[in-house]
Image 1 (cartoon, rainbow, N blue to C red):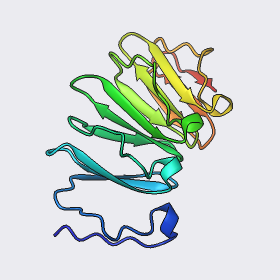
Image 2 (image 1 turned 90 degrees about the vertical axis):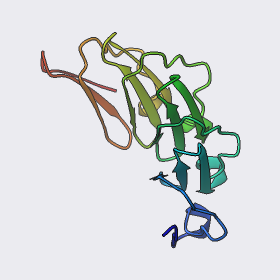
Image 3 (image 1 turned 45 degrees about the vertical axis):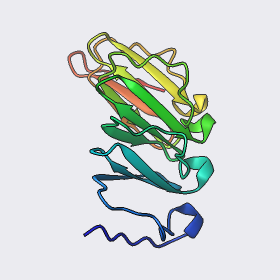
Amino acid sequence: TDEVQCWGHPQLGGDCSGIDFSGVTDFYGNFHAFVALNKVAGWGRCWGNPQKGGDCSGVNFAGVTAVYSTGNAFMALNTDTDEVQCWGHPQLGGDCSGIDFSGVTDFYGNFHAFVALNKVAGWGRCWGNPQKGGDCSGVNFAGVTAVYSTGNAFMALNTDTDEVQCW
């Protein structure tokens, strides 16, 4: 069955009346909105706070294989083309224009920012609130095997050397 029920604050995702969920393969959420994705047909439906991810009318979901979130934004990934699209609050992860995602192996998010990691080449790209993880210019990603997050910060771990970096 494709019946979906939503409840809670109506402007923050609690009202999904009138949305057609037929064929949805995956659901994603952040603190303010939801995304329903049909990977097979290549479409998505968003609802909730439009400034924080509830409006995805400008997103092309064709070929999208995964969606990631901060507390205030979403990111859609097409692993075949390395194309990434972001929407939601622009200063909190919703604007990833101009970032090269070629070769990224992993994505991580906290409440305010995203991290794109290339474990093979040893580099990372961060965007969102710079004071809360969106600026990783001082981080050495060489050898990093995992990234962890709180709501306001990130930690990069190199399991070979036990080195930890936080930002």
